[in-house]
Length: 124
Image (cartoon, rainbow, N blue to C red):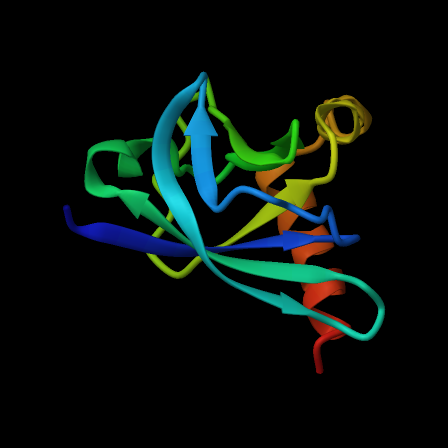
């Protein structure tokens, strides 16, 4: 099955045990690689099965649920993200909810991009 590749960036290392990625209990892809910075920030290279690439939108976020990488599916009409885009990840669903709450009046996509840039700086 053809894959679509993306990067998920985390503020801190979530210590994921399972390489599979889930959406509502359904396996939609897998983690291919992990890159940890000196400051314990993490970038995952992921592959999403072609059947599910429509879930990857500009306001899509990822979170860790019971040591699995899960996707917070967007319920908006946000545009699809191009392959090899960076997506923000959270170590818990609570942290993801807090981020969304904190940025309710801002564009989630813009807030996520700002956070991603800050994390990527630590890899330079």
